[in-house]
Each structure stands twice: as C-alpha cells, then as structure tokens.
Image (cartoon, rainbow, N blue to C red; front, side, top):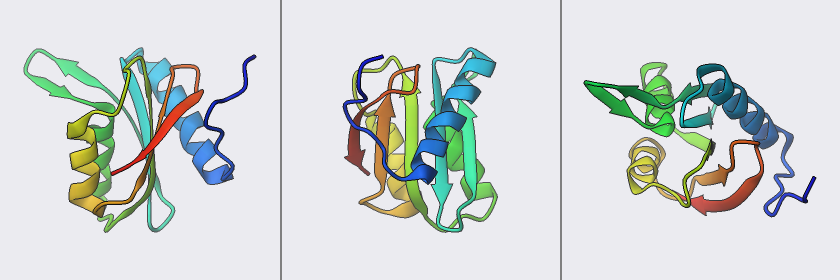
Length: 118
C-alpha cells in the first residue's frame, strides 16, 4: 500500500477518517465526512442526493453539529472522489467555527491527500 501523502499523526484525526470512511461505505454515498467539535464530540455524515434535497457530507455533518449545540470545530475529514476542497463546504465550516479549522481531504480508501484550512 502506498504511503499516505499527508499522514495524520493525531489519533483523534485518524478516528475521523475511520468514521467518515465507514459512513460513506455503509450508505454508498459519493462522500463521507466526519468532524469533531470543541467538546470532542464527533459527527459522521454522508452525501444526501435526493431529487428535492442535495447536501454534501460536510454540510450534513455541520448541520448535525449545529443542532447538537456545538459552538466550534477542531477538525474535519471528507473522503470522496473530488479533486479539491468544495468552497461551500469550507464556508459551512467557517460559518460554525470561523477560519483556521483543519479540513483534511481524502480518497474513498481513507488516504488523506491534502489538508487545507477553513
């Protein structure tokens, strides 16, 4: 297996990868995402692609965090086939937590290929 180009050293961030990967696999969605709030709670979500409702996995996870009373975020992981960060996802993260939140982007197998900030 090739080395991870952007290895995550924090075990809590690796946990986000595991949760995002399992959520994506279970739902067979285009993307899986997981985020951790400042209290350490995690929110795993998958893309919603209904005829009348389209949300990215990150948008769903952010909505879950907001409705659970989260006041900020520590980290985000999104896994899928996209080439780069989606501006709408970064905006949703900034709306909840402000700029500077690490957003780790990875392939469906969980390999992190890039990290950006919200």
